[in-house]
Length: 348
Image 1 (cartoon, rainbow, N blue to C red):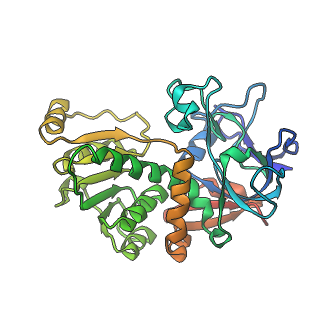
Image 2: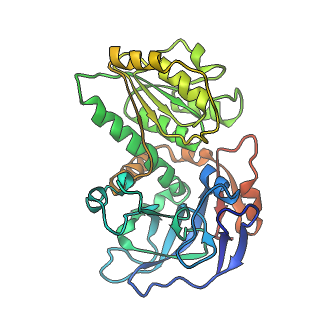
């Protein structure tokens, strides 16, 4: 069986190689990989920046955004052969901590969780993989072409849920929302904002190409240039770039009683000169709030499937700008100017 493997921490080690068939002796689902989405995390792991192999192994099978088809399922699993499934990324820590024990493994309090294709457990980038039914969600057959987007959609489903919960702290009636970054996560965040009826705005650096077109097709407003120059005071900002200058500008842009959600990961290598006192002053005097959000639990995957199921499937298909056959997998890790979501096709 072929799989995309690498040695964590070692650049240029990513390879397509033969590995053993998955072990389903514990009653796990046996799943055939159909589509594997590639994101910035995968590219950074492939560059040797981080990643952890399973205990006792040298290599890690990468891939955490996957759509699969069940080949075999135990009778009591609730699944059957032919079902389309998406597997969750994170698994609870072995203790488990109070959050993990409550099914909120996305907020693990001791950091001992594992993540498929990232931290200490093999990912989904193999022709077949085993998947515990407790960490799988069924998707409709009608979403065959777009369900690979469920995992990134779960990230922003959680972000929107947290925003709503925080907003309930007061009599809050937000109307305007801004997304910074028009990659897959940003565009999916904009989609969910449109579905909730917000006046949606999306900011990105590019001025032409598929990103502005996709934003306008949603009925949202696209912006480029400098974020700090926007004539806008949004009630909600979801920051999806992880770029330090954009994050800083976002802090200064939100309206009174505003909420800024940081959903993009920063490299942490950009030193900026800014007045933390002024930011603190605005947070206090305007009742603003800034928070971070990462990963997702079952509830957020369910919300993601619901959002994608009701979306325009043709619009969602446009987010997938390249499908790369498995035999040509290196092309999926070579970024192109018009890329949004690149998917490796395991079915060829």
